[in-house]
Length: 180
Image (cartoon, rainbow, N blue to C red; front, side, top):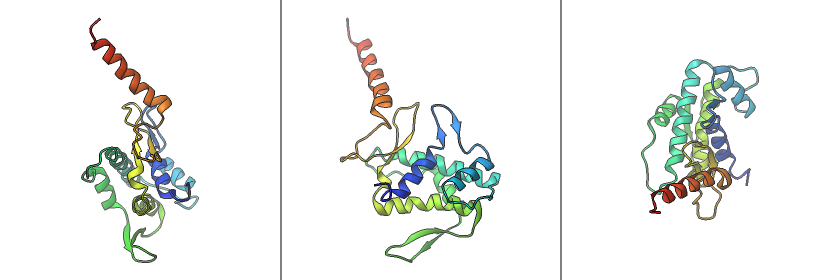
């Protein structure tokens, strides 16, 4: 499965560079962004990123998280504004090589590496994994995950932690509201 959903796993990992619960950001600086892109074999070792590319990465991550949240509802939602803006700033082009059209980064360096992350949306869409990418509905978590359940109904990154928190909170609210 890992190879099948390679693009989806890249997108999940990219969104999870921001840990909402701990407020820890793996992309806090241009150097950290370059380190992450190099670590994921998207950028050549020794390459650097700048503030402009970092701003695009932050918009891309925020927009992807919002789009993944929208996957919980079966309706078609408009493209999140941050995602639309990030896509517009990335050097991408449509290619007609292979069995179907795809997106390919143009150029080299950090902008092209970040464009590879954006192009993964098309790859995930083509292999059917894009709508399976979701974010945890627990408001303190928002961790991205790949919903591999048969009916695509997972709501939390972990039933043991986030699902339990949500259900316990709902139970306590019902217990408090019920007459004695």
